[in-house]
Image: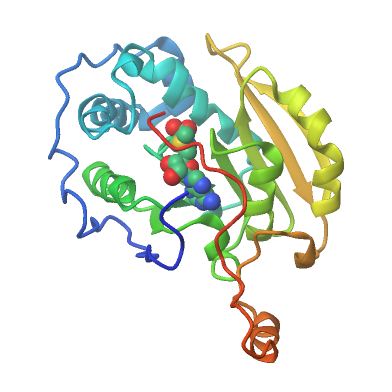
Amino acid sequence: MTPGPSTVPDDSSSGAASSAEPSSPGAASADVAVPPTPPAAEAVFGDRLGLAEEFVRVLADTGIGHGLIGPREAPRLWDRHVLNCAIAHVAIPRHGEGQEVIDVGSGAGLPGLALAIARPDLHLHLVEPLARRTGWLSGTVAELGLANVTVHTARAESLWDRISAPWVTARAVSTIVQLAEWTLPLLQPHGTLLALKGSRAREELAQGRTALTRLGAVDASVLELGTDLLEEPTTLLTVTIGDQLDRRRFRSRPPSSAGSARRRGDRRGGARRGSTPTGGDRRGPS
Ligand SMILES: C[S@@+](CC[C@H](N)C(=O)[O-])C[C@H]1O[C@@H](n2cnc3c(N)ncnc32)[C@H](O)[C@@H]1O
């Protein structure tokens, strides 16, 4: 997958557009109809419904115009995307202001921006390596006036030791085991990865459970959310870690620690350990 962490900076911007990308989410508009607001939206977003409607409008316009969402998704933006993602917030208990959540592979802000809108008490870090996408994300954050979002142009594994949170979220990024390889080191002790999955979540967990345990998972399960509210309930695969992780078990670990630096120095004339992760990337419009 391209680009790697050495070529894509973490601009950690909170609304500032990337210089390599269109500076405004309005730069490429799509001429598609904005879907009507379903009744469930008010139950999910409460007094933030207006912001959620604005997000759907931006997705239908420049989200599709920039190719972050396929044009055929336009009629399903609420049910299949924004509501389906926002409902995941019920898995995150309220613990005062500013509790941090890292959303990995945010793409068009799903689930990250949907969560930031539904839960102003959370602070969302959107982690996405493609500058074309983070340019759009930063512009959208500014357009919606969201103060609880930071955008990082980076791969998840290049942010280990730089950001951490009790919660990591992701949708449609990779298999649960590959996702765990990239994201468990972003979790604080006893933190939980919330992976939004499709109907095969239980099968995927059964196949990956041994590998997840080896990576440090102490609990993993599948939850159905929004069954009483949404046309398409959301399936969450949750993976919780214990006190600490053994980084030596992670194949994609970046050479960022002092220990790694020492080992590189010791390897006379040897090749520098690459930080390119193993494993593929399912990129493309959502
Ligand atoms: C199929 S898209 C899903 C986008 C969004 N989560 C959604 O559900 O619409 C997968 C995204 O993951 C990103 N990605 C892939 N590998 C990643 C990694 N190691 N760290 C962070 N993001 C990654 C890709 O750039 C892409 O935007």
